[in-house]
Length: 333
Image (cartoon, rainbow, N blue to C red; front, side, top):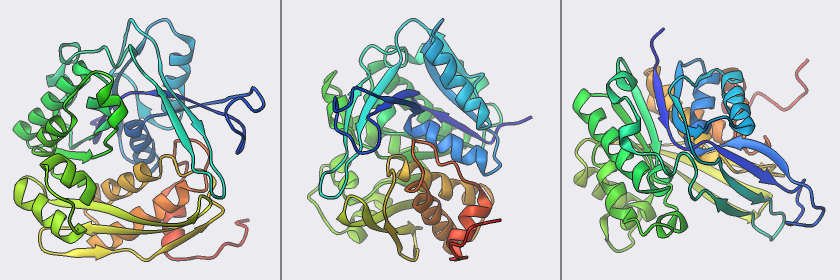
């Protein structure tokens, strides 16, 4: 069976205090799995696409085995995940509430993925017959090896005519941990991308320009990167951590399509919401959906993620379409 999508990035353990507790409050931590690219891959697999994950995890490691089992359970292929010396990357999440925002602490240094290199991967085999590759700005930020691999992967996609999806996701602390030149590296990857999930702040950072309106920044990005065909982004308004409003925007080189607003009261977990949105866009592009349908579907998928604990958006196409069409909130029986 051919694979539609390849997602390249680090697989992570996520450790969180129960509910809205602070770190150390009860001494308990819930363990889940995630990672930006894996989140996208899980959504696409649940939407019916063939997806493989490309990553590196420690060998002979029970938690790494559990991560693989979790991906397989969601329909994501794991045959392209390397095992090598190192540790699992992880992050700690303290879920906020009311006026206290959520907080994340990364613990990813010297992980099996962060210490991997471009030479570890069989690029020709990985990209054979691939339709689309997805990567985020987090992947190259984890270390010099992944940064080199990410740039090589992007260039090979351009050489082979494979669609490259890029999510900006700038993580300053990760770049600083090894003195990586984040803006230059991400600009290079973006130069090969056909689809980008970026906003005006990402564009100003990568191009070294002064802040400008989203409309002007998007126009500048299209002018600067001739391979780009689509840019998608969201607009978020918050009255509190638990009450938010989201709108999605889908830009082509000659048009803008905007979703209806989703009012989200009682947000459960927003981590992975951007990945759910990105997966919604990619699902529709792979199915050649109309632009307005695409942005409505993607925004509804992102909205649903805010109701689900954990990184993965455990939904399906029918639920997303119900949310798109405001089909009501009665109990499904």
